Amino acid sequence: MARLAVFASGNGSNFQAIAEAVRRTSHSVRCLICDRAGAFALERARALGIPAHVVSYSGRSREESEGEILDVIEPYAIDLIALAGFMRLLTPRLIDRYPERIINIHPALLPKYPGTRAIAESYDSRDTELGITIHRVDYGMDTGPTIVQESFRRVGNETMEEIERHIHNLEHATYPRIVIQLLDSIDHRSR
Image (tube, rainbow, N blue to C red; front, side, top):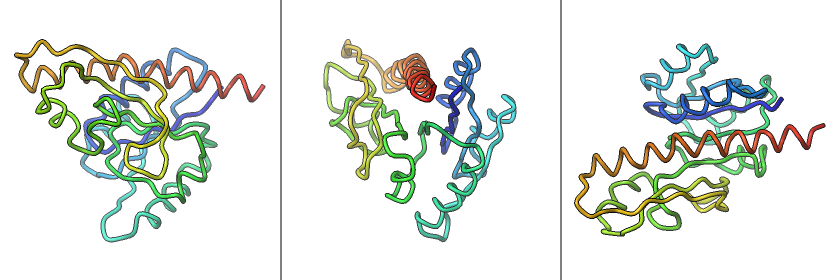
């Protein structure tokens, strides 16, 4: 049984999709880390019975905040970290503690449109193929090795809301599946 931590900053829909899928396996979501006290992800964690911890970045360095995150997750003996709308760039302090074991989902076909405006930039681009990328986290912004990409073809007359909904549907179907595959692989290696 492998142990997962999810980091989120906002609504938490990807967190919930992952948590519900992981519940149907032998693995567990041990905790949610959130950097915003008012984030709806915290409500989702409460409803799912998953311990949630708020770690603020306000008024302190990323390294200091990540030191607190490491203190929080250490007792959970985490095997994998999934970033699910966590709007912070991680430092080597955290990345090096979990090498190759931090993944992220990005709402664009990387290397196009890294950063926080990916859906809007994809929409504005007029690209005919849009999608998502799940990748390992490295020191850069959305630059880590790709695990999988899923895409769809744009018809051309969709609204921004329709594109966003399509991307979120892809995320909710794909990210839990990949997280479980990685947890299965970790569990298999530890036997």
